[in-house]
Length: 218
Image (cartoon, rainbow, N blue to C red; front, side, top):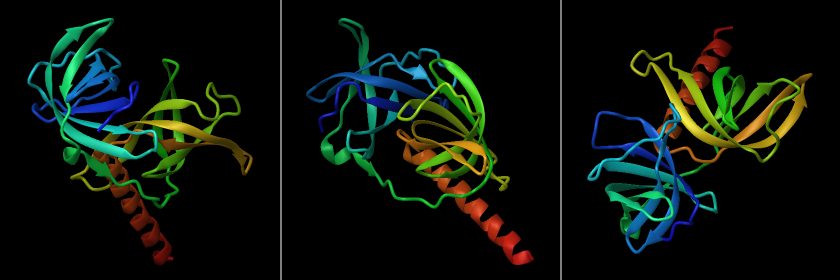
């Protein structure tokens, strides 16, 4: 499978107990080797150094907005024009297509941390689905339609076994609108891996059940 140069990827370790999620960019592809720049920890925004032999799960979204994932191994490091890390690129049949369906949007407040132009902002979501969300915003915001944002979404599950999940993803600003004398920005997720998407699906399902219980209790 040919991956476009400049594509953003998300890496998550499958060979250690450390489950930090890293963001990197594809710099080059030769045969069955993928060259990426040094990844950045999504949560700390610090550069991460991958050890040779480390096993990772990679997810990405192609130009057609199709989401894929595959398993890889760190083959080593090389310095050309820039320092790069070499990853093993599997055969085409080892790529997993992540299903991207239309999801039900649930009206529920959720805390959202937004990173844009290396600045951090805090907002509260008006509603959320596994495909995107809408956030309440002031009349003046630093971003505009079609801008790319980095998000941390806080999902407080009622189920004690789930606890609180923190979803890291990127999103594109679709529209900025006024509704009921409030300003909203609607965002579409652009690089959510299937694990985080399942967290959102389960959270939405849980909130839907809670809403139905309240409606039937009257």
